[in-house]
Structures are given as structure tokens and as C-alpha cells.
Image (cartoon, rainbow, N blue to C red; front, side, top):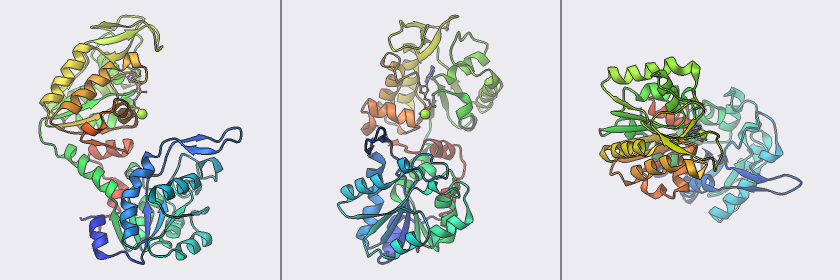
Amino acid sequence: MATRTLDELLAEGVRGRRVFVRADLNVPLEGGQHGDPIKIGDDTRIRAATGSLRRLLAGGARVVLASHLGRPKGERKLELSLSPVAERLGELLERKVAFCPDVVGPLASAAADGLGDGELLLLENVRFEPGETKNDEALARGFAELADIFVNDAFGTAHRAHASTQGVARLVPKRAAGDLLRAELEHLEVVRQPERPLLCLLGGAKVSDKLAVLEALAPHADVLAIGGAMAYTFLAARGEPTGNSLVEPDRLEDARRVEEAAAKAGRRLLLPTDHLVVEKLEPDAPAEVVAQVPDGRMGVDIGPETAAAYAAEAAAARTIFWNGPMGVFEMDAFAKGTEAVADAVAGSSARSVVGGGDSVAAINRLELGDRIGHLSTGGGASLEFVQGKTLPGVAALEE
Ligand code: ADP
Ligand code: MG
């Protein structure tokens, strides 16, 4: 089944049509305490959204824009209003952005009907409505009433069947994928159908967070290299000492199953062969490199030998997918393993995709973003997609 691209939609013409755009304007906010004004901490997501919006507005569309912000849990929480985002968006687009304090209903309908060609209206936070995350039919119909065409450009929520992502899509006669969503899918598709060898680097905190992706990638990746805290659950499952490292005792069986799946498929699963250990997790704790974690110590980063081995795999790979830092990278002293791997991924000629909030933050902190093939904006969605799952928000766009 085919999904209409924005190019195709623009070629068909959008002048005078009401285009409902679901974007991801879920930006971090600052202030709001003791009467301070609420400010946008980082406007990366707003900037990213302007690409599709500019093209639609230039084509004469009447854009009704929707997004969630934070987790208001179905209540109207003023501190999670999108109104500061409307202001910032107006500055970036250099045009007036109307703001509707409602999500659906008479006020929203009147505002949408009042738009001229090439004008834009931002609706209030869709998660102020309890029906949003429940994919409520009436709410989806409320959105559909504002639209002739639906464009989804919010990859980060595409794995959720919500009223503004999946519900509305089915009720609008014409739909298309925005440029951001399309770029994400194209890059992640390379991981699903890789040029081999495919190296998957998985790290971060917990096996339990990423079990499904571990299970899917173990037989798929030529090499699955594991770091971060989750490596200790795998090492414990092999019966190796892990000291006070972050081990999930109830996941040992899962870790064994992942190892077996890799072995059965003839794939290599790599675990750290050395570690940086400390007694206490503090930024300036004395640390040493060891081959096995002794009692009373915890592993906070992969050691240099492991980093070199993973870097060599990155150099040999044709495709790389990386999710999850190799250590407690928030503390400079424990960021070396993550840095070494980031350098190797950036230096490799392989097509590379990095997903996950903390992994992307680590890449950005090292200013390596330009040298990575693709930084995925949607952590959960990118993990589900590389597992081979169908994303409801994407499936609903198909004709
Ligand atoms: P992402 O957001 O990229 O998906 P995760 O959220 O799964 O990544 O994991 C990131 C977290 O894992 C970071 O806060 C990091 O400090 C933590 N972490 C990585 N290695 C270790 C370790 N050895 N011990 C404890 N925490 C770790
Ligand atoms: Mg994270």
C-alpha cells in the first residue's frame, strides 16, 4: 500500500484546502515558578517542524496545526499550554500564527474556517483532551471536522494510536506523510533491510526497557554489541561476576533467550570484556579499569579494550544502528566509552542511524551530529519500527 508524500500532495494542489498537520512540538519548557514566565528550553523540534509547514503554506494551504506537549493527562494544565510555542513558531516562520485555546469544538471550527490561504492556526495541546490518548472516536471526529487533508509529521508519536495520530487519519478523505516522518521512515528502513554487515549497538539502562528490540535484533544483526548497564544483566546470565552493577535479576532468563536467538541464527553477540568500575556512582569517584567487576564495585562504562573492539566493528560494518549510551555518559569521567563508540560510528563509511533520547543527546554533546547518517527524533517509535512492527500512525496514512 502506498503513502502519499508531501511532494505528491503539493503536486495535487492544496490551495484553499484546510490541512490538519499533526506535528511534534513537544519541546522542553523552563521557568514558570514563582511567577517567572514559561520559556522554551530548546526549540529544535519547532524548527524541524517548519520544513513541511513552509511548503504547505507556500502552496496556499490553510494549516490547522496540532501537537501534544508533556503529559497533562487529559487535564487543562496552563503550564503545558502550547501558546509559547505559537509565538516561537511565528518568529521562525516570520508570519502570524493564530492560537486557539481549544482543541476541538465551536471555537476551533470558527478559527479554522476563518483562515485564509497560506495562513496557520495552532490548536491547544491535544493531550488536554482525555480522549486523545484513548483514541476517542468523538475527538477524532472533532479533528476531522477541521480538515480536508491530514498530514502526519510527528514520527515520535507514530507508534501510538491516538486520536490526533491514527483516529483522525481514517476520517479525513486525503492524507499524506510530512517530510520529517518520511525521512525517518526512509532512514530506519535501511536498518530493516540493511546492506550487510549490520552492526547494532545497544546500551542504556535496562534490558526490560529494550527486551523486544533485543529479541528482534539478535537474529537480524550480523553483530549485536551490548554496552551500558544492560550488559551486566547479560554477563550475570552467563554467570560472570557483576559486583554492584545494575543487574535485573528477573531478566536473566530473557538475556539467555536473546543470546540463544543470536547463536541459533549464526550471529555474533558481543559483551564488554573490560569495564570502568567505581565504588560509588559520583562524578569524581576514583575509577579503575578491570576485566571483571569485583565485589563492592559497579560498572559505569565499557573499558578501553571493549571500546576498541566495538569501534573496529563499526569500521567494518556497512550499516549501523545505535541505541543507548555505553555508560553513565552524563558524568564526564564515565563518558569515554560512549565517546569512543560515537567517534567510530561517525568515522565509519557505513550508513548509520542513532535513535533514543539519551543516545542522540550524547552525539549532540560531542558535536558529531553532522557526521552521523541520521539522528532519529523518536526513541520509542524508532525502536518499534526497527523491530519490524507496523506503526499505527503510519499505517493509517496508507490509501
Ligand atoms: P536512550 O534514551 O538513548 O534510549 P536509555 O534511556 O535506555 O537510552 O539509557 C540511558 C541511561 O542509561 C543513561 O541515563 C545512563 O546514565 C544509563 N546508563 C548507561 N550505562 C550505565 C551503567 N553502566 N550503569 C548505570 N546506568 C547506566
Ligand atoms: Mg532515555
